[in-house]
Image (cartoon, rainbow, N blue to C red; front, side):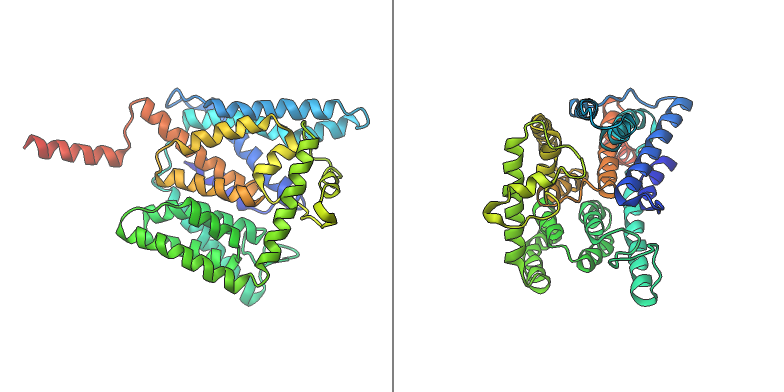
Length: 369
């Protein structure tokens, strides 16, 4: 259980001068190493196996290793460092995933509590920044509490929303306040598309979501059309670059200049692909398309419970944002995916969740009477 808490809250810890991306990957790498060590000292609870879609991680690591190894102008030290930056930590995540599935207990009971505590704590951090100027960041460019950016804060709120709503209706309050303070129209759109509530109260809430979203856009995005056109222009340039680079452009510092060269009508493009879907193919090549389609097919063929709805919100958010690729957000998605795999492994082993087991026993007792 300590590993689950560390994997969630460790992503929010300061990372010194490593920066947002490297610091987040460092904490994910540390969580993976801890999972491997714990699995070596404990007896496995279940057989546990990785689904076929997870093999794309290993293929990704090999692809990036070959990419950097074939570059004769790059010193070996930089080749090794670049491989770890783009692929090596994925290898550790792959091994750690199998270790967690085999050894870790099911954390579904307290997972919504942890997410509610994290989002509530970030609201307190935002208040400290806004009212007293106390911040965990040396140079706070935005008031985002403990999160490094509003994008990551809004993404956590959207992904956690279905889990919090299924646990306690009032628990979505810190997520809703975070979405309002972060002012991310993309996050609201992902929530509206990906969340499918049930029941009378939930249906009314779902019907009100478009109204809230429209009012929010009208209030916070006075130049909405310009923002949308800038994003579309960037997507056109990214697609043109993908068509000219079947093996991807990699992660070199100057690699993204190729996208700017394909900007239509000499318009400027955003400094990022503005879509994790496109970024995956742009950076690594066309071979990632079948892997992405396979993962999407797996996601959408699952029963639409609250855990799957959280992952689907992340899937939609990745369509028009590059937030899920941030280690802070991607780590959360990884943890939720592991929770689902642990749940399925328990079901395959014939183990029953204690809450469901007690309910089933009560029904059986009543039937026997």
